[in-house]
Amino acid sequence: MRATGRPPIRLTRRPSPGRLLPAAAGIALGAATVLAAQVVWVVRRKLPTLTELDVSGPLAGHLAGAPVRMVALGDSTLTGPGLETPADVWIRQALAEIDVGRPVDLVSLARGGSRAADVRRRVDEAVAVGADLAVIAVGANDAIHGTPPARFAADLDATISQLLDHVAVVAVANLGDLGNLARVPRPLTAVLRRRSRTICRRIEDVVARHERAVLLDVTTSNVGFRDRSVFAADLFH
Image 1 (cartoon, one colour):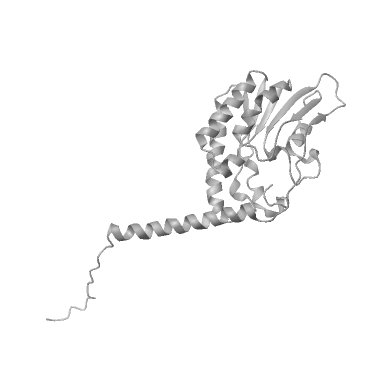
Image 2 (tube, rainbow, N blue to C red):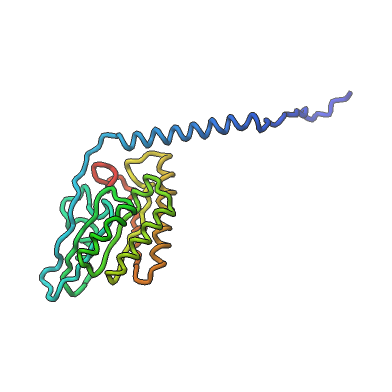
């Protein structure tokens, strides 16, 4: 037979599904092992424990008139671990910039590590403050600890509903990109990024259901938190 000059054709058999399944399972198991090891490392890594601040107190005391009373509920985003004074915490900075025209009396019930269910359990305490309006900042710990989004949304919705029976307005902060946390290595950052986006969307959806609830959009600061130097010594706050 004459040679055609064409390369020989080699026939290869496709791996059977029975052979692919163990390989896929091995890859999945390996990825899960890496993530589990990173979680343990993040949680047990020896880093400083920071003191939380109480942002409660009057603002703009030189103004005349009865003070507007505000109650704050949420997690460490309202207690500023790593900051020097309560005046450095964002809520007091924001209130100092706003021309309310009257003094403001801020009462904080925020606690580091709080989830939406914890905030919901403090509603009666918040109502007892006799506030005119409320601020809620929660969701980071729910995202980190894997709270089911539907459960998170139900707890937040109930909290807002109960508060609006007693206050004029409830302001709710959404959630920034937790994939930026300096304490968290890759690929765990991708997991936290997805979770934080899911929780952020749930916050926005819940707030939109309530006529007297307003959204405080913190996602515009995501770019700034890509800089490791902005984090406190625990690389988390």
